[in-house]
Length: 163
Figure: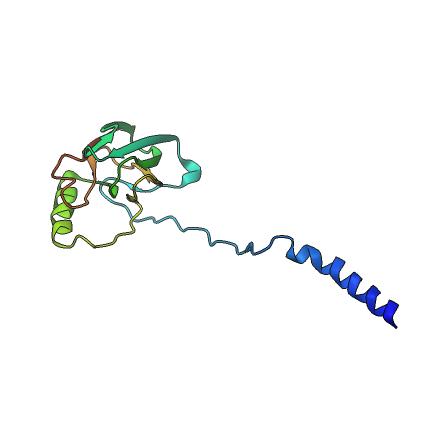
């Protein structure tokens, strides 16, 4: 009886060992993010798989974007890799000059307002965020940091979308 019990316990140990091999790792599948089809004056959310180029944008505590000016072709889908090299929160928000100015004014009144739009990247100090945007319409657009005081300090960039 003692030998049978030992054999059973050893068998259980060998059979169950692979189940614990990953420790606390979880195997949950993340739901695929749905890409919005909402069209703005300056385009729509882009499909990362269809990005035709990648543009790296740096945001600094000097209240500047680098680069501060972009030339893009109409229809182009751009993957923005937005890095905050500063020590304070920064964001990159794409829009028309008027929309950004109006939104910056609203942020002064409601500085803790939170957003989650596909044309916005909120980047904590030392971090990087990714944003993908398709520029479906030709024109001149802007991007800016709408953290209160940053836009007014000149943290604004320009996007020219050519047909």
